[in-house]
Image (cartoon, rainbow, N blue to C red):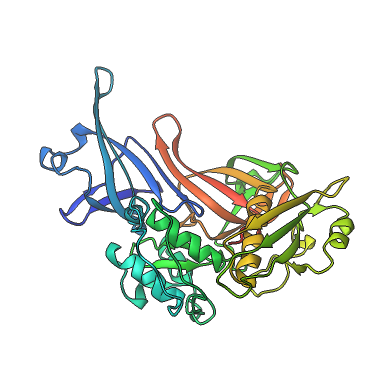
Length: 405
């Protein structure tokens, strides 16, 4: 059964589901989902063509499962003797409104606020103004994206977005609204993204301990079960530190006149870092943490051997508490470690057993050709359609616990 992508315009009642080509991308690390759809003008009535304009709100779905809610940014019209007249719609989800605007640099946010109150004060002008519109769990949103009905665990807001700000916050001049929001939430070890239906901001962490929602199979000698068309993987030591030394000297917090140092080893690199530990005997040693708060060890990866220690030295002038500095060094290591291993796959269609592929999900990979036999995390997925290549999904996968904020 062919997967059908529909674009609905709720303000006009228009639905379009016959495309000559499209590309619809979601990347966990990109603030907004982006899409580009092309349709032949002959496939649409004139009344519909007149209503296709920038600023129109749209919802996108696959086989009825909502995948995005946003606005048209651009409408392009092209004509040629061989192809006739085509119309291309480009847009992004609702979070793009926050990405495209700047913060008023005069605004200050007092330390007495909770992180949740801070988020709502920023997000209210864009349509998210109540506590019910901010959550730190992506479980319900995954159910919407995939069409599955898995149980949704109770919120852990008390541990995350209910925490109290420890010092005053102020945006930089010319700083984007989302950039400012993201800069502060990442100080708390959190990332911000939008639910598929656009009703909630999710301010939380990637979920690596969830049950897999699909499988990628490429077995030698058992082609009937295979669903992989193309696949590649990359394991790299390039730019991988074996240990990071981070120091903070920010004023106005818990250590305004002192200097705190933390060390964190890279579990994806096997190296002798004893000289660094000896050089910083008073430094606090921290670790990457999994969903349960346990240390992420080398057993979670396939460590790459380095002949020498590969230290990286960083300084964070903005860290005003020990927790902020620890989150900073974990995030900096995660920026490196997520490049330690990546895999890319292409499959037919947009679903497996009726379940759309989605970011922030786990998939079981059983690939004899690349020697990968383990669950991996979906960092990005792109739905595509073209006359030459048909309907496909491109997946970018990384190791669990290699994405930390």
